[in-house]
Image 1 (cartoon, rainbow, N blue to C red):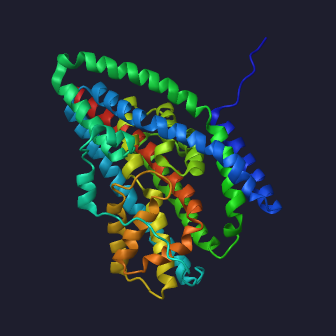
Image 2 (tube, rainbow, N blue to C red):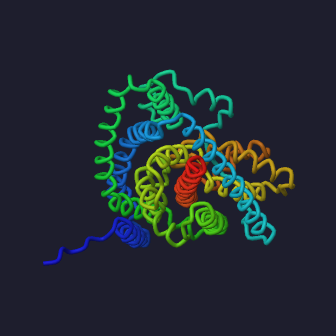
Length: 411
C-alpha cells in the first residue's frame, strides 16, 4: 500500500494564506473584525512568540557553528566583506527604484494630497550611526539575549566563534557543547516551523479583517507604487544576481524561497522568519556555514524592501506638504536610507524609525508619518518579504563566490 504524500510546507502556507484572506474578507464585510482580533490573532501571536523564543539561540549557535566550520578567521572576513558589499549595493539600487517610481506616480498626479493627521504619531527617534555603533557591543551578555538585540547577539557570536577558533584544540569541549546544543535547537526549530500555516492563517485573517477599509481608501495608490517597486526589485535585481552569480534560474529561486516569502509577508518580521529562511536557503544550495552567517546579519541590516518604502513614502509626504524634491535631496534620501538600514531591528514597524530619520533630513514634519501609520502594516508585509528574499539571494551568491575562491586557491 502506497503511503499518501503529504502537502509540502510552501503549499500548506499558501493554502493558509488564501484561507486567511477569505475568512478576513468575510469578517470585514460582516463587520465582525473584532472576532479575528480577539480569537484568531492570539494564536498567531503564540506562534510568533515561539519564533521569537527560538530566534536568539538559533542566531547565536548557528553563527558560532558556522564560524567554527570555516576553520579559519580569514574565511570569516572573506564572507563578511562580500556580504556587506552585496547588501550595500542592492539597498542603494532599491532606493533608486523607489525614487523613480515615486517620482513617476507623483508627476502623474496619482499621489493624493492629504491633510496632516489631527493627532501626532509618536515614533522613536533614530539614535544616530555612532550610537548604533556603540550599541552593537554589549555590556551585559544576558541583557543582549533578554532584549533579543540581534546586532549584539551577532557580535557575541562573532567574538565567541573567533575566540574558539583562536584557542584551537583547547576549545574542543566548548565546540562539542555548541554542536550538541545546535543539534537540539535545530530540531526544535523544525517543530516550530511546521506550525507556520497556523500563524499565517490567523495573521492574514486579522490583517484583512481589520485593515480592509484602508486598502480601498485614498492611500491605495501609494501602496500600489511601493508594491510595484517590491516586484520590480525582486524580478530584476534578485533574478539577475542569482542567475549571474549563483547559477540558479529565477524560477527555481522563487519556487525555493516561496515559503520564506509567504511567511515574511504575513509575519512582517525578518527576525521571526529566520528559521524558515535558513531552511529555504540550504535547500537551494547555500552552504550551512554561509547561511548561518549571512541570514542573521541580513535580518538585521539588509533592508531593500524598507529602502523602497522609505523613498516612495518620502516623495508622497513631501507632496502633502507642497514640497518638490530636488535631485540633491533624492541623492540624500539614497545615502540616508542606505546608512539608516544598519542597526534597524528586523521586527514589525521598524521601518518607521528609519523613515523618521529620512523625513528629518528633508525637513518634512515627522507628524505626517501619522498619514501612513494606519496602513503601515500593509507596507511592512511587502517590504519584509523583499528583505528576507534579498538575504537568501545573498547567501546563495556568497556561497558560489566562496566556492570559486577555494577552487582558485586549490588550483
